[in-house]
Length: 161
Image (cartoon, rainbow, N blue to C red; front, top):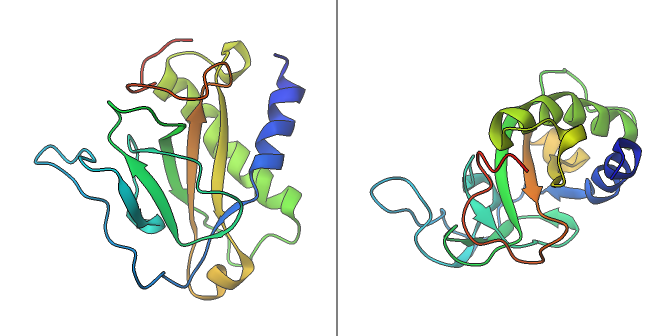
């Protein structure tokens, strides 16, 4: 796959957005003693972190995500997270996507073990919305997936694919 195609997928899928209003029934991601998710459940979107595995939470404002132990079949894995350091919300979705790309792309190599350009894997992101930004949300999650496999079992960390 060429970079422009994969980048287009990132920007289209980049519409996943964290919502600033926490869903009342959402809870912290359940973790074992090592910090790994140990139970399949819906968890607060702000409780996921690098190395966590999830299923597709859908599009739009995301308050909770379906977390899954990485040993079980899943669709996405968090490979990087960062806080946006600009004072104002980006003026366009393209500007938000560029900020995301600048952080996710180099982190992809570190996590997967191969550059994004040379990988068969793909990624997307969950980004703040204008309303969650107003509530102080600056967190972006970068999520790796395998477009050739609808469900992944295990981690893609160091996959070198």
